[in-house]
Every structure is written in C-alpha cells, then in structure tokens.
Length: 106
Image (cartoon, rainbow, N blue to C red; front, side, top):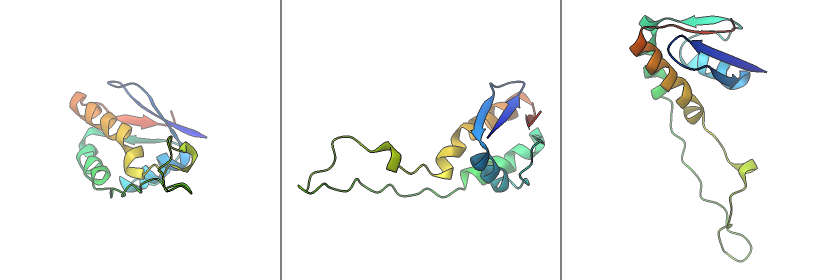
C-alpha cells in the first residue's frame, strides 16, 4: 500500500506505507490513515528528519578474482530512512515557504 502526501503548493508525494509510517514516527506523529502537518509544526518536523543518522555505505564485495563488481546489484543496495526522507523534507520546505499544510489520506 501507499500513502499520498498532498499540499496546495507542491506536487503530490507517493510513499510506501511502511516508509511513510516510519517517517511519521520520526516527526512525532502517530501513523494513521489520515493526517495533517500544519506550517507551525514544520520547523520541528524538519529538524527531526534532518537529524536522522547517516549510514555508512559499504563498498561492494570483491569477486573471487579480487576485483570489484563491474555493475552494482541493485537488489542488495540498502536505502536508509534518511535517504527516503529527502522528498518529504523538500515537500515540507516548500509547503512551509508557501504557508500551506501537508495532508495525507484525504
């Protein structure tokens, strides 16, 4: 399933439910089907999202010949919650600048 974040001053943001719920918890919201983030709550939400830890990237494992693989195996790549938060951070910044709320589930 997916969660669609909407604002009058930005395009819609579609995010997998599990990722959206994790980010809702980070900004201090209980994961719910419907919700709203008001402009006055956005500075705290941005601070919480920006404070997410960065995860160190691990270099690709060498193959049996000791060479790094020529192309990455995308199925094995890890995407951190901080990376997943980036589109939401941008949306919050734009909504805050435009004085608009962000809603989801409506």
